[in-house]
Image 1 (tube, one colour):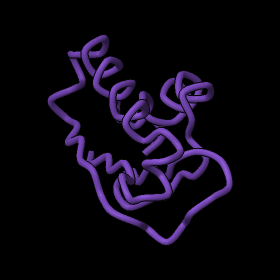
Image 2 (cartoon, rainbow, N blue to C red):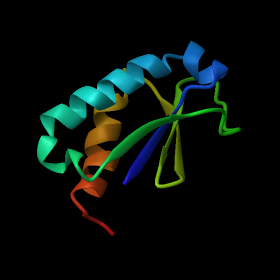
Image 3 (cartoon, helix red, strand yellow):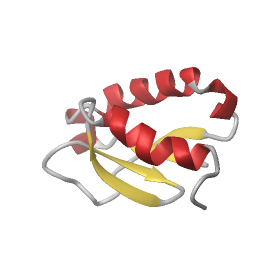
Amino acid sequence: MIVQICVGSSCHLKGSQQVVALFQEALKVHAQYAAEVTLAGCFCTGRCNREGVTVLIDDEPFIGITPDNFESFFNQTVLPKMKGEGM
C-alpha cells in the first residue's frame, strides 16, 4: 500500500508535517503491518481544501486530514487497508 501525504505549499501550511509525524507514529504502533506500507510525500494533488491535508492511499484521495481527525481516519480507513480487510 502506498500512502502519499501532500506536502505542497497549501497542505504544508495546514500541517502536513504533523500528519506525516502522526503516520510515522501509527506505523510504529502497528509495526506488524508497517512492512506493507510505503509512506511518501507528494506535491500538490489539485485537491486543496479549506481545512486539512490531502492524503492519497493507492491513488485514492482523502481530503481534510488534520491532527484532530487523524486517529479516526487511521483506524477507520488506513488500518483496515493495511490488514487487507474490505478488499
